[in-house]
Length: 387
Image 1: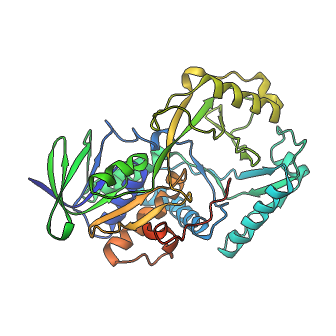
Image 2: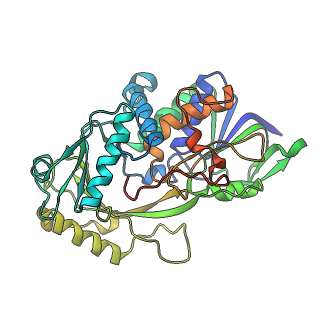
Image 3: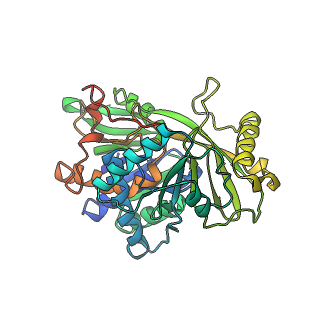
């Protein structure tokens, strides 16, 4: 039987970050198992690559700031450019209630040491993104240190660095079950390719995390949520350096990547299969209409129907990650439920998880707000609609 000191289930960006940070701390007998056929076959390869520090809770702002530091050092540390481009995030409010939520979030951000975010009025919003129709916009918030990354490059950097330190990655390796040992510990991981004896297990299975947890007899409050992406054909209607522009009224947002405009709008899921990643014509028509109304120049854009796609968020009830030891299983650790923030927070989550596993607790940041027990304790985090 094969063996590994640490078995990480899920080779996406969070799992790869965990593998690297463990190996960099000296824990080099790490095996990463991924059900996909190759790197990035799950949610990481379908992410749109936004990065922001503008959150409404302290723990999420601090996760972003730690990730920000790591992204700045990424090329030197890993020899891979994550393509971190700080073109900013522009939130646009259409009501005083939305404006007050943005103001309250800036207070949280300032309390965490993120001082770059600022309030903007309709006139400054129009300067920051001249394409926007600001009729009905009462103000907003802008942060110039936010921006964009390349999710697959972050994944590649962590995976290659982890492998250089001795970590192993296996693809097409779906986990089928666990074998229990003394005291209910997980003694081995059973896959289609055989059994792997383990010292401990990390669940980093993204949208599939609850299924993995169930094999270990655990209930996990993580559910998949489809997010569709409309893609235009190549055009020069909007500049590549345009900030991510978010309309807080309904969550519609857009950015430019490689000469194409990505249009995004969080709709409610339909159909019986929560893992369905089809794109729907009805949704495409609705998001195209929103785009043309709010940015009139996009009336000339054509949707590339064949290029549109959807991916899966891994949602928790309070839209915050689960990080730490799984309740009731001594050697099972969780890095799940980032709720749409997995790529941007992966550098921080891998670092902190390594501290929890190797030192018994995270020391770089206070992550008590992310403890897996919080729902059973009746102490969830606040979950703002758009922050």
